[in-house]
Amino acid sequence: MEKQSEIVLFGTWASSYCTRVALALKLKGIPYEYVEEGLTNKSELLLQYNPVHKKVPVLVHKGKPIAESLVILEYIDEHWDTSPKLLPEDPYERAKARFWANFYDHKLLPSSFPVIKLKGKEQEKAIEDFSELLKVFEGGLEKDFPGLFQFSDRETLGYLDIVVGANACNYKAFDEAVAVIVNPEKHHGFVSWVTALKDCPLMKETLPPHDKLVSKMREKYFQSPQVMPSTLSIMLKGKEQEKAIEEYSELFRVFGEGIEKDFPQRSPFFNGDTLGFLDIVVGSNACNYNAFHEAVGTSADLEKQHPALFSWVTALTDYPLMKVTLPPHHKLVARIRTKFSLSPKV
Ligand SMILES: N[C@@H](CCC(=O)N[C@@H](CS)C(=O)NCC(=O)O)C(=O)O
Image 1 (cartoon, rainbow, N blue to C red):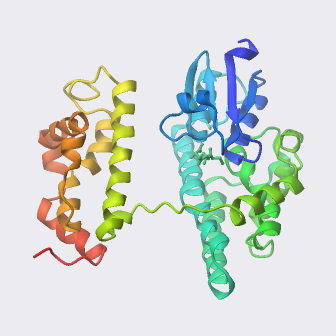
Image 2: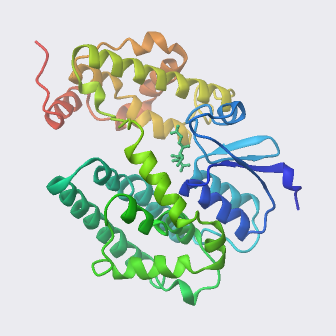
């Protein structure tokens, strides 16, 4: 067993992403040191360990940092390969668990954000939209993991209990601070699951106190300026578009530097002459970069600003398998224009 000081969790008490990691470590009986971060005044160490997102949680294991809660959970499960396992053993079951964790983080959770911003009828509509997605989530879990909602019948928390429970067990704090978004009559399965999870001793000792969380949410959502990131801000015009492109370029820089630092040995691809995981993930999208610029009408100066990153994208675009698989450039330009109601540049 490693020494406590070899495993350090940088977190902040109100973050359910950090609660996930604390739950996983405690469940597996892994001793760790905890460092509380102030998000308005992040420590140099946090910025050094997570220069890309500058967010918590970060788990530092023997000096090596791992960021992003879902990535950290998988790391913990793989490195401390002892019982209890978080993810199912079967690859298909594992894939389904990851699928719903992603749905939770990237669809369901973000659909609660408009509820914070909007008022009156618009807020009611946002709550309905959230509830629709929650129905999809509930239905999907019931189908893919029969018995999941009967947590009291099981002995220990699993991956989805942790991913969802760390956040959803706080839903009453959101109801109190913002608006009621979970109707127990409409979402019986989900609410009975979450209620049973909240009663689990490990959850009880790890979740933040309800009243403290309500105050924190009120302060965060209503007393400090909100920045709503928009991936489509590049569609803006004039000065606003210039600013969006600068931000976009900054993200390219962070991405390019991160890739250089983490994978200096790739040449030209991650598997030498053949494509690896990141070549496929990035290339399938980035190789269409010229189509995006042509459709939006922006100039593609990013290539000059990020030569190393773009020489990789160029090599990917020239790769025979990529060539036969990517959509045709002109067809894609037309599709992007239709999708975003853009007229051709004359
Ligand atoms: N996708 C990330 C989200 C982490 C996250 O959003 N952390 C917040 C705290 S809840 C944070 O550090 N925010 C600081 C900031 O945005 O500057 C994860 O799963 O770890």
